[in-house]
Image (cartoon, rainbow, N blue to C red):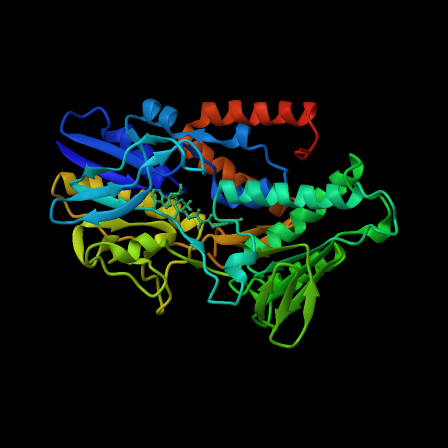
Length: 435
Ligand SMILES: Cc1cc2nc3c(=O)[nH]c(=O)nc-3n(C[C@H](O)[C@H](O)[C@H](O)COP(=O)(O)OP(=O)(O)OC[C@H]3O[C@@H](n4cnc5c(N)ncnc54)[C@H](O)[C@@H]3O)c2cc1C
């Protein structure tokens, strides 16, 4: 029995487990196991919508146990805490009933593997900025997005419930990091504010608008995209009265203010850090597995660790060369392509055939700017050159990326059923969560 263990059921890991389970799950000589610290999967690019309350997580979650049952793999819950390469075991910490950790429901244990795939994604990189880790909120996982949502809601409700215009003040939010996450979140929060006003959770006076400042250290927002996309996005954000500050890095975060290198001090109610990523710390402790300076596992063209041929890595936690000295970017589309590659390569390896080499194709990038618009570049079908798209068409393409992920992991029938259920839910509930 050859056991393939995949750690991390995110954009890449869940797709790989599903693809492998569907293809080899019924065989007697292979078993596929997926490990994740959570019981459910939510596609990470949706987290800014969770934070703004515009996405109901109950409708969009996939339960790993059910997915495993339907797609021929096993699911084990637990956070990876270490690795024993000589005995080929992944070490998992105990699972507790809740974050208070009072009741242990699954003990710490070790899981044997023949082939290990690391797909642990990434977490926020604070770059050692003073106070950032202590005082800024992050968007690494569902729990954090929910925590941010509640904090924003309570900040607005507390302020508005004072009732007296004299004591009410403008709420101020700072989002640090002008990449896709920061931009998408900033625009989504403006939508959240509109709905709060509609349902009486926030003042309706124009002057009471929430102050949103997007702070980017570099010379422009969306540095990974062409300059015209960056300029057009800045214009869209300005139209939404979101202040975009560039070229002035944040040097200090305090509970009620943010300070920049240029000497600016912004008073804030909530600071959100969306400025960079690194792979989880556990990867830097793995029994001789080579990692780079941001903990990503260094892999070869077959996505095998350069330290151990039985260990593979994909997605945000893998450092994989692309072209012209560039690395494959930490994006859902890269995790998806790597999952597709590994599904074929691991099956070839079981048959002792060559695995081939992974090649990343950049199909472009889209950034949502509120519920009705998106902007970005998509690869031209004929020329493969980037083509600027914006507005509702771009938003449609953006939404299609999630539908594609759903269809890949849940199948077309379940995706259609889920879309219908989302539509019905929309008709019978407010656009955003109000509690
Ligand atoms: C708000 C936001 C918007 C984004 N928008 C886009 C976009 O529009 N387009 C795009 O291409 N990309 C986008 N991204 C990036 C994209 O989400 C990631 O690149 C992608 O999810 C990476 O996939 P992955 O499988 O490597 O990791 P993830 O999807 O992050 O999954 C990692 C999994 O590992 C699990 N895990 C972590 N640590 C452990 C552990 N110790 N033990 C067990 N399990 C563990 C986690 O629970 C999770 O399920 C966005 C990201 C964010 C935060």
